[in-house]
Image (cartoon, rainbow, N blue to C red; front, top):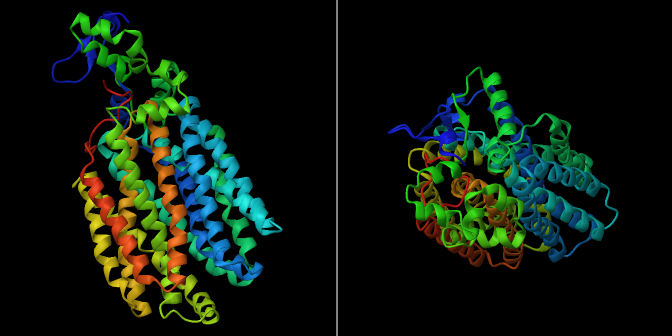
Length: 502
């Protein structure tokens, strides 16, 4: 690239000027264009996807017990209905992350929405247990694409507002959980679990209806070297928001980094075959496979962050879905009653308690919004994990139903806050070249926690081991909070990176 095209950095401005005028990055453009009507439309589309994923996850609290009663399943078979969804998400999150980083965000969520909608609807007609398990596994594979939508939305948000608007995005998950609990309360007693499965698959269909009008991420396009396409998207944002793009030409971060280097020997080193791919994202993405993506995430620059993030995602998913399941299991088995009485009791309290507990996510979101851009991502997450431990501790003893529900409500506020913030932090931490792959793999590791969780929440409590179950959740939440404290980077207010900085 010629110096005349890009120029030199203006002192104190962070922008570049040269013979052909000033230049700007995608971050500069997004800040200039602001968060306007265009981002609201992107938020609404991505939010529908987040609502649908939350509904498909919350449905696990209702379908398992209902199918167990209808088909006389064992507790192990009931747990498997939940676990296979997480197993599918484990596969899907990794696969769709790679697809999204190689072929675009839009293609990633098109495939995932199609798989989720079809498998979710068809599972309502499953004639037997084995086919139901197979279809719910496919639903899980589709749901694994959730991080693609969050990364896509993130890449349209200006850096100064990113934390707040990602919390708003997370509110769609809460809407999904509340809507699903309400739907189950209305549908299950009269129409049964098949109608609940069918109706819960409908929101995903809206993603397919409006897919044609969705834009590709300009950051992704710029990273791939498709600058002209990126400019078209930015110009559309400018028209819809009623703003103007910065003057000059659009450049990517890796081009700016090259022009900051004055030492010729360093230039030569950067242009050597070994590092050329790092500085030219288009080359690296075109040759990126699953193994090389994983190796990049575990490279010296990213390994510590990646491993700690995996631990936090595991602990977060384990704790979150554990609290969802414990909401019914602890109340239904608090006295270790006979199986018949347990079933009658759990049927009485399930819909009410899950519905009440779902509202715990609203104050959890408010806490996230208040803390994420003031205290930072790390301090907010660690504090909420430790608070969750405090609220869970009394549950090692058998308590009255009202007190148990209240403590689970408070614990869920905290774990919702950590769940929200980690989904903000993770895509901010990774560069664009491996962002959805990194978040997808981290989310996959979290799915392992979700997959193991039903065996603990249902198995231990059914076996009259409530104390052991609660202590295990205590340990997981505590270790997760400690891992957060060792994250090497605080991303609050920082611009997103396009490449791994060497």
